[in-house]
Image 1: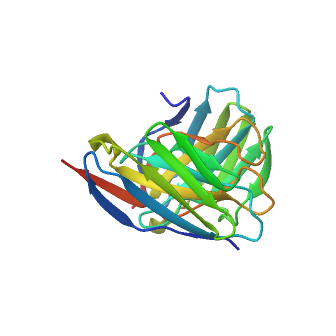
Image 2 (image 1 turned 90 degrees about the horizontal axis):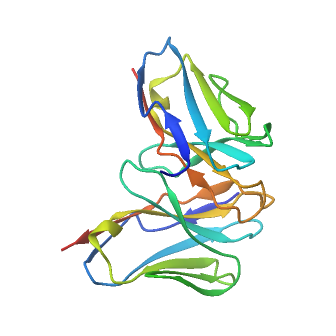
Length: 114
Length: 111
């Protein structure tokens, strides 16, 4: 149990579908993150929320839409995705948004776009 | 920009010692972290170095040389369960907790 739970673990969707990824952290942290992990590539930061406000948006296409309704929950809404968006999507949290904060990751959602 | 270089794969046998190197380029330096990720699992934090020198945590140690923009993760008394990917990471930009990761080093431990 990592303290960060992601659902679903696996998702297959067509390019015209709309789906959402959910992340919940039980650690009392104030910052939450979405990272994308593709084969043979480094983890890529997508979005960061600190105290429920988006503080970083790393040039992510608008077909990915994050939502942070409270400090424990983070969503990633997906629509009209492309096959190249197939990847492992990792959620993470940290106590705060400052240097040397340790990130706590969930196990990810493995997304396949057909 | 920022970039990190680490070997793509390292192999070793049980009981051995292995060193995974990481070189980085950043406009400002705020520390070097290491994460472990087993296949299908969540990345987990291993260590953080802000100052030069060696930090030891059980079988794992991490070293940093800021003047050389270089660090390494040292794993001793290797066990089969250490087979995983290991990522070095540095904070982006102004030093907040958002990290830039290397591509990862896959460690394969054989009997």
